[in-house]
Amino acid sequence: MPETPTVIVGTGNLAWHLAAVLPGSVVVVSRTPASAGEWPIPVVSFDHLPEIQPASIILAVPDNRIAEVSRQLAAILPPTLPVYHTSGATPIDRITDHFVHRGVLWPIRSLRRDDDPADWRDLPLIIYASNEATRNQLTRLAESLSDTVAWLDDQQRAQLHLAAVFSNNFVTALYEVAYQLCATYAIPFKLLLPIIRKTAEQQDGGRPADRQTGAAARGDTATMERHLSLITDERYHQLYRDISELILQYRLPQHHADFRSKPDDDL
Image (cartoon, rainbow, N blue to C red; front, side, top):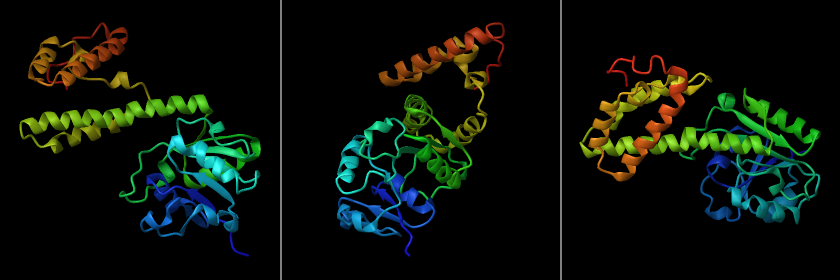
């Protein structure tokens, strides 16, 4: 008897990477299969779903389409079919309650289709489910993919998603600021790559403020004023002030005694 497949709904970045790592048979569903591009596995339309008889459905669609797509699926699929979405910020109840076994499988990583398929063993997976049976099934799936699996409810997951925005998306935006500052004077941005990598590698799960260095952390107002005098873009000027003030607020209570003791060449 042919193996019943896991069905991924969507043809975006996450769907591409999921298709590469999910165990067993996998089929991708798209509203427009002809425009989905080249895939190493079958890509079919919604109309083919009933005949496929999927083992489970993973919704790898934009957050604002989860409810709509799950309602479309409810019109053609049985209520006992497990349906999971992959959003960090979306509550589980955005999947229609037609489906008894609802869940969340959220990987904490930015994934792009033009990247090589990721090694998911070191990629944290966050799971949540509507009942114990679904939790057990999701746990088995997640543990087959990753060494780090955490159960977080809707509120916890949304808060972690927000934290991920600050630690990933916003940091990337700051890299762009640094890139623009370098480009203004024809300085290769790649000269900053070693310090960027080192800063990331130093994070060990402890409080990041304890590893904070730089002019704001040591109260070096003279250097800070020199920096501000170099900034011509008012957006970056205000950003420098706001982030420096944030560093001061985090550092002063714990390090007031040696606040000015760091050497001037400490970045």
